[in-house]
Length: 469
Image 1 (cartoon, rainbow, N blue to C red):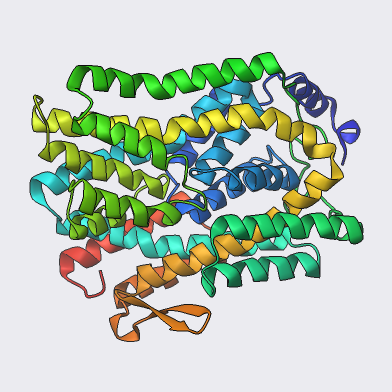
Image 2 (cartoon, one colour; image 1 turned 90 degrees about the vertical axis):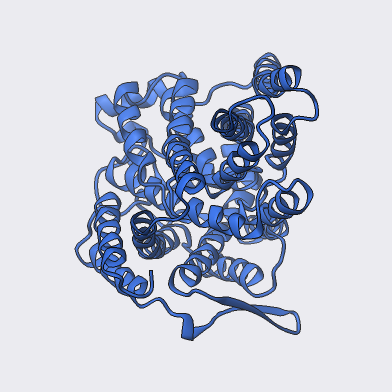
């Protein structure tokens, strides 16, 4: 169904989108983004799955090709791609206000949850109740991510060549430890070559790309295109850089250039620009600097922080908030330790996520104009196929670490295998994973409902002392 085939109400909304207006009432969109924000467990794979299900399948607000196009662009950027996808989609639906709301709400639950958990960790250490709840969430996410891989693959890999490209991307990451930027660059080149020599490969397979049901409110061929301009670009760039830098400059002026707050603000501003390939690609560097260079926390505490970030909503890079919280608490300067911890955590969160909004608001109008460019579209289609392999690799990583206590890497020539120690299988986690899979695949429960049940199961298992938590 094209835009001209739609009922008049849908055509009117599509026309408003073409003029840059709101497609969905802002209040309704805000409620949806708020609901999505509390379901963003499981790293980027789980977060993309939640948005795919809510926006493409349930709400029918956006078409599958449009969703894939936006995701492919976000995969090219440094920073958490799932949050950037939320900003991009919010911008498509409601303009700049929609992007700000979608991106802000996407990280808000994680910020609040990790602040509370960081305070509990400093005050009391690990507790059985908290450990149990999050131990129940982790295996549930395994089932949700597997569902995401199957759904995205089914709708995006419409030709054997694209399936092969996805498989090659998975193998490059999982077996050969190829750097993420190299995988994406190779996928873009492969997509361009496929588009040039076998263009029929990249044609949609039919339908709307999201299964049976009504046409999406925003069809793939009828989206608003906010016109980019030099004046707009410079205005957004200046405002974005100002908002990014002012808190760091203010902290440096008030506490000194050598304070822990200034150091954290500058350091995490830099890491925000090099997080290509998701948080895993930069966390090794962050851990090394935070532990060995700055002494903000111990190696064991870094692992604990990563575990907390893995099982809270929002991007995994949120672990930097935990790092900053502990570092500022232990070196508060003239501040009360708790006030210092809060300031350090919030400043770090700010400098980590503000660039995401800047990248999307700067680039999205240009990416929209390039939708009609066959070469660019072909390259982005190649990236979309690679994204399936990326999500599958993340799903494997998350499953191994959720179900096994120890995972060892073994090198066999150029191949590096991450092999779990079967003796360290967590039986309770495995049982919760099976239950979650039944709820998701057989009974088709919602993500939020499934997570709630599994969190309760984890809490109950921890309280009665079952093994494997």
